[in-house]
Every structure is written in C-alpha cells, then in structure tokens.
Image 1 (cartoon, rainbow, N blue to C red):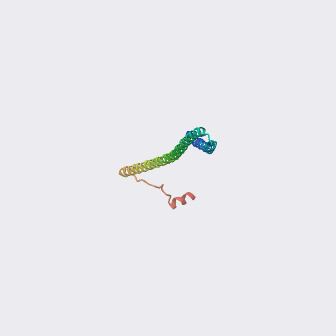
Image 2 (tube, rainbow, N blue to C red; image 1 turned 180 degrees about the vertical axis):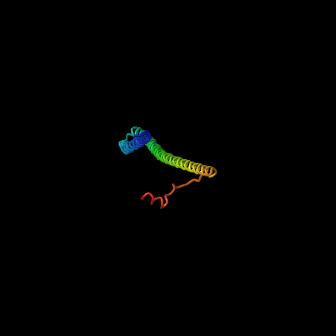
Image 3 (cartoon, rainbow, N blue to C red; image 1 turned 135 degrees about the horizontal axis):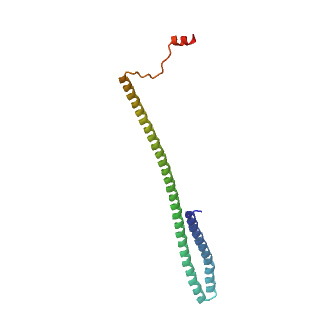
Length: 158
C-alpha cells in the first residue's frame, strides 16, 4: 500500500475511533441521568450533586469527542481530495510526457524528411551539373540505353 493510502487509512481509523468514543459516551449519559434521579428520589442530595457534576463532565467530554469526530472527518476528506488531485495531476503529467514524446518523434520524422529532400535536391543539382558539363564537352547524355534497330535484331538471327 502506498504512503498516501496508508495516511488515508490512518485518518479513517481516527474517524472510526472518535465515532466509537462518542457512542460510548452517549451510552453513559442515560444511566448517569437515571442515577441522578434515583439519588434525588432517595433523598441523597449530596450524592446527586456529585453525580450531576460527573454528568456535566461527561457532557463536556462528549462535546469534545464530537468535535474530534468533525475534525477527523475533515482531515480525512481533505486528504482524500488531495490524493485525488494528486492522481489527476500525475495523469496530466503522464499525458503531457506522452504527447511530448509524440511531438519529439514527429519533429524527428520531419527532420528526416527534410534531410531526404535536401539530399534529393543535391543529387538533382549534381546530375544537372554533370549534364551541363558533358554537353559543354560535346557528349550527349542518354537517359536510356540505346535500343537495337530492327535490322540489327534480324542480323543476330541470321
């Protein structure tokens, strides 16, 4: 598992633990209320005061635990969003790199085509120069080999 996924899992663990703590504290509120009421019915006012103080402390702790759940969920959501953004950025970078490689290949092909065209021009220029030089020397340049005349062909068969 990647480090980002591990971090996300750790944050989700914090959310789950905070939610469980809230559940446990909520479960303790009901019995604590009942204990206060029982102490009051039994005429144990001092005991009821102690229970009331612990009840308020429990409610305060519950409030803090609920805030912890909110913060943990926010941290998890933020990390998840950042992970998704990072994934999209990575995909864009990979796409950009691939497109850059394609562009480089096309540029290389264009350079090769340019080199071939330049070589063809140079070859044509050299041929033209050779023809001009030969014509100046009085030699005719023949593009095709001389063809035998029909008379020459018949002489071969005789």
